[in-house]
Amino acid sequence: MDDLAQRKLLSALCHGAIFFSSLIVSIGIPIVILLITNDPIVRENAKESINFHINLYLYAIIFGILTLVVIGIPLLIILAIVSVLMPIVAIVHCATNTDKPYRYPFIFRIV
Image (spheres, rainbow, N blue to C red):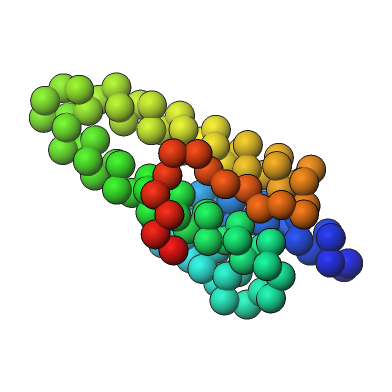
């Protein structure tokens, strides 16, 4: 497998890991890819995916607490939609633009 195909596959796998499960597996895949690869673009995509997962977890906790005030329910619905759409956009970006990592908008970058 050449470097370009491997870069596409690993980058897409980082962002698509959220569709495998919602807990440990989804964040574990980008962490493993971050640790085993030397490609800087794949590493940046893995970091961005980890940051996106962390942000989703934090927002879910906050919005879950806000369900006590009723405003959290629409926010949780929006979060669910965003958690499906944004990784799809990231996968398409990684497949079409292999020389630039994808950056999720409006997230805090912790890693």
